[in-house]
Length: 263
Image 1 (tube, one colour):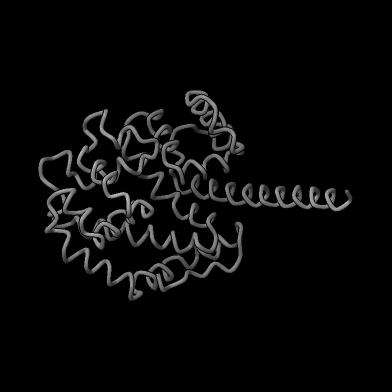
Image 2 (image 1 turned 120 degrees about the vertical axis):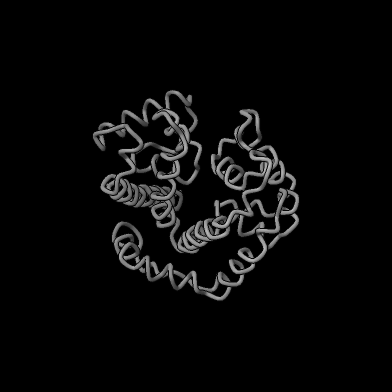
């Protein structure tokens, strides 16, 4: 995309700047020539798409559809994406339901090719809903090209709201969070877990996530963690711990280099 967001400094101070200016920066990004071109094309043509095959055979529309869910890298995996869409999400054995990344199920359910017998693409509000998601996701992607921690912080609100809205039980919402790779990364860092934490048994991960959330936020209820106050605390912890982890890695690398130079 032609517009480059301004992120002058990393860490929590950088987040405070981005948070203050995000509305103006998003507006400028959405009005850039390339974004306007692809979203206008999507708005004009998506109503004519009736099947998953129609969508995957139209690269311009598919790029917006995937981009709205952060699945841009699958643009060439058309057979896989068609299967995700055609299977839908009603059957527990549907492909999207068997994937660890919950974004595929969200994508499949939103388009509805495999669920309702008629595509949702013809609904009057559908194009605008997808375009809103696309613009937000692509702005975050542009921010991430400069600082990926900022992208994760921007993603927190929409991602956690989607988790809370999409699953009934609290445990189910936690498992949905764990299946959303960007959201999980933020929770894991903010709550002070190492990268190796992802390798332990899922039920143990759930228990430890909830215990740590209870001690840190005073609640293990996902809908309460979605409050503005807790989201802001989550972002602050995430950015501070991410900076500390990066400094630790840099320090360790410097020590290792110094020892090698003495050999």
